[in-house]
Image (cartoon, rainbow over all chains, first blue to last red):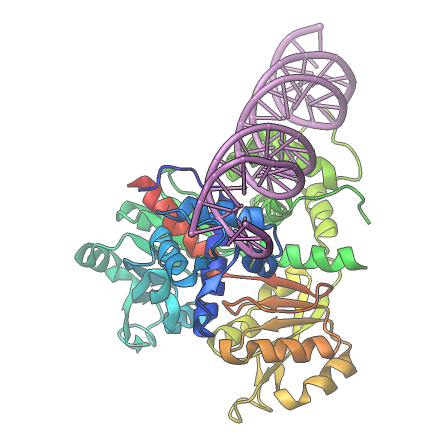
Length: 210
Length: 210
DNA sequence: TAGATTGTTAATCGATTAACAATC
DNA sequence: TAGATTGTTAATCGATTAACAATC
């Protein structure tokens, strides 16, 4: 494991680098300078270099541009996109089914192996070749498949109860798409994916213009 | 308009405060201390106070807790959730239809007034009482309704072309759900809502534990 | 009045930027 | 070799935390 500390801001930039490098490789480009990356990110090239140095096992050669392929490898390794984590999804509504149908999570080291809901019309059907179980089977599936990650796309009203349940069943990380604060013991990783924050920034940036 | 500068980090916290305060009010609680809010956020109470001071038109009384209702008002005003911005959504796929069906955007000052797609099965139908138009009608609708904000949920391959089109039609802000970098003139506000970043942080935090 | 909690100012911490030497 | 681009170190900048005076 890396010992150097990474700030959250920095961490958020790595997937953006990776995306950009993948698209470069797609266009047949195999060398890249920190300046090019910086232009895309609208940030300084020093920052790009610092970021990339942190995740590069071997130094780049001064004067020579970096190899796109190498950087992609470094980034994928660092971000843990090489090994796949299995996750379950709770709440197969609009958003939940969109996520279950999304094919690209494998590229990010995540695989949704099952969905859970209470709607009889959904239970025991499949979506994107993944089974949907009744919420009552939560403990059985988590135990059988040794699941550690849950994706939460439930209605607000039941979300906290489900979190309590998940925690008691040994889930260690929750990716929360429900726009509310969830209580959980400190050792549980809860990552809130909150569009309210993104929307607030959008609105603020629009207002700055005027 | 507020003249004090707000950092992005800070801006991201305001919707979380608002959410928490709304749930407090829901539980019939009408007073709150910065300590309570700080506990929920897992941050320092000084930070909470600084943040709230910035958006409060009048000072809180030393020694007395803050009024939940007042804070909610301040936050909604500051975040611009009082006036509604009309937006269109391009790409009515899984994610696009989930967003169009989501009823809660009004609370955040946004309203999706129409969707666009090229699928004949979708075009001229409605979703959540909102019309879906053929992409060819983009310029007409944007012009007629004087739309300034577009939500992008298109396939990667066509996204950049659509962005170019949107820019040429006078769109000033794009809320981008497509996991790729989009090129646009500097004066266009592009807010990327990228789950790759959120997922990277989740994975990193899980790995920290082990 | 005493306790609680506030706002303000100063100190610390961390991240970004700038300058420059190193070298392919 | 000269030009390009790198990594490293130091300087700046901004945000968070700590200390404390103010007052309901």
